[in-house]
Image 1 (tube, helix red, strand yellow):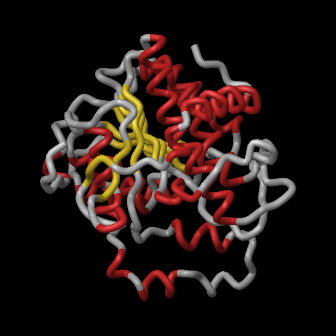
Image 2: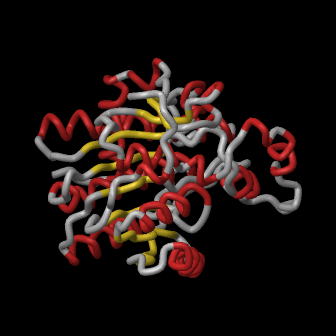
Length: 312
């Protein structure tokens, strides 16, 4: 991959392609959905709050007149919601060309659970998307050069899968749980690519990370369950804003992975700047634990068991 600047202007024409972006109401998800819509794709904004989704759709329509957008409810912290979303898409019987597994929650201060009893970050960031991708697989297999992009994080480099306590019942630390969930996302992306090749599913699976992007992720999660919501971490991030980039720039690695002819299956993309905090998209570094194929296969089997989803 050449070391040249890659921008939204380099996104190939997406006319006629159907894209689904989870968590598209703000931040990276919004910018990803906007850029894809401006490039001609039909975009489904898969969001937990449909009112916020409608407002996001309206803003995108203002920036991309004539864009084809739809807002659909999807709560990744509920397997029932995931199943309902997937069943509706299958009922419509339209092939899916791109699935961007973007939505996530970060650094929840106290251990909270999804509707199915999973630790919130692991359940939302990994298991929800795992079940969603499984449910949409028949449509992805019929897509044109279909791709699945899963958004991981730099923190995977300091994370590990706690096999003895996946749901963090015995010991919960916010960033440790977040790191585990994002390492799981990366392992899932790589294992999905391996299985696609093995079983002839015909889709490309890769991953991306935004570097240090200024989004609501840094405040929404840390404020969950807190009464003093005004005391967010936003001020601290503002002090080192020179190290970060805006959400539109942070979405570029995802967009590269989703659309560039140079992106490769099983690849991982992030900013090319110092410490991968900001910059133009390039192939990113994967820590040793993110390259553990046996762990990826083990995580896949465990995820199938706890979500009770079937890949076919």
